[in-house]
Amino acid sequence: LTGRGLSLTKTLVVVLWSISTAALAQTPEVLHDWWRADGEVYAMEFDTAAGKVYIGGVLHYVGPPCKYLSVMDTSTGVPDMSIAHPNRPVWCGVSDGADGLFIGGEFSKVGGISRPYIAHLNAAGQLITSWAPTVGGQVRAMCRAGNTLYVHGYFGTVNGEQRDRFCALDATTGDLLPWACSVTTPFGIHEMMEHDGVVYVGGYFDQVNGATRHNLVALNGLTGANTAWAPDPDDDVYS
Image (tube, rainbow, N blue to C red):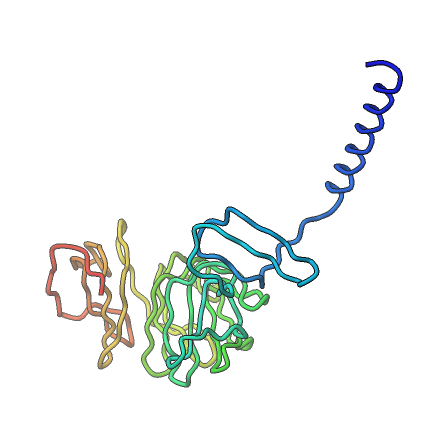
């Protein structure tokens, strides 16, 4: 290209370079409160005058994001979007007996506040900041009996003390309780429940507290010691 053609080409390159530089200089921001589609979006059209965006694709529903935890009205099914949401998956939850909820999982924050792996929400779905035990890894299962919360997860310490994947916490203060047990690896825990002072644990394992227990064990609710109950199922227990 020569003459005017070359000049126009240079001008176009400069303009495109300027636009690209300006675009790169902007930091994109994800609007987390925007509603989400449940499938792929293939087409979009903006109507700036009406303040609308039209979308089309392989979708059946568009709604607000629930961010790993949802509290829904039992009559309408409408989620309460005002609750404190965790920033990573929730693996387990149990009622606190006062319309609140204990949750455990992979998260490090709840409602934007640091709360690694375990948290307590009140009846309004807000974080109870005074309840803050320090758990050294993901929480995968839990159950509650009165003021005692029994917890299993991928941790080795709780509140600075050694606990090998199982612990018991005061449900009011978050203090660590003496209850403890150990399960020999390899193992996986699928379910925990408490009844009449006994904590039942199901999953896949061969030894608990040094004694043979296949996939299902009953533990003393005060000490964590094995009870004599040993049904010995031959495969995983899930619930």
